[in-house]
Length: 276
Image 1 (tube, one colour):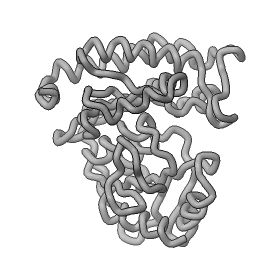
Image 2: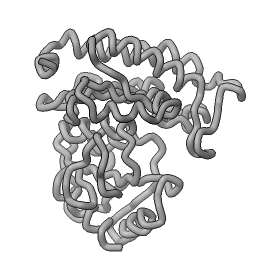
Image 3: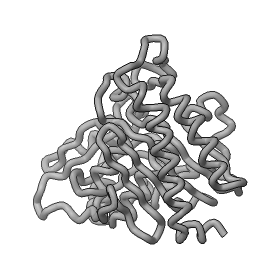
């Protein structure tokens, strides 16, 4: 059974090696080396794609499906080319959920705040995830029921200090409907410092390591959230949608949603989002 693979250190290491290799072969050689014709817009100026995104996803799709025969890949660039491919997150086959370069705007600008995100899921259950920030030298790995680690060291999100200002990374307004923008205004209160984030994957990592207290996002594409949600959960955190139930990578979530260092903080952020 697929759950047995979570006890197989060789399988988990091979998946990590695949993530590292894709970044080394396809992403980092193009960092700060992109030509103008190697960068395109998808839906707008905040939604970019580069040759590195496409090449890394192709690399990962080949490596990961070879590692787990019968599995499929749902990746950001593949779904952009064929939207019907997204349905595989709800299918019967194990699915690798891939964002080859999360934080493409930062990557294009030559900044280090980008990462490669990979999560393995089955029947909507997140089993393992890898968050790799190659320019920062950081690899975070989470395995369902077995905890989370950053460069081999245990990750624990902890809890915000009593009375401390809550640091919250939010969705960029371009990715929110008018109703969702109103909900995010609920965070504009004393005791909350809410700011738009760049890479969603690195925002989740910041929560998992206790450098940030929560995220609040308004979209549900699985490749942006799957790896980070498992990372935060295995570090002791919690996530909840506006309806009060955990976020589902298979979709149908009431947005915005939040992931936070602990359940109490998640409940606090949810109450603020519902206040508008």
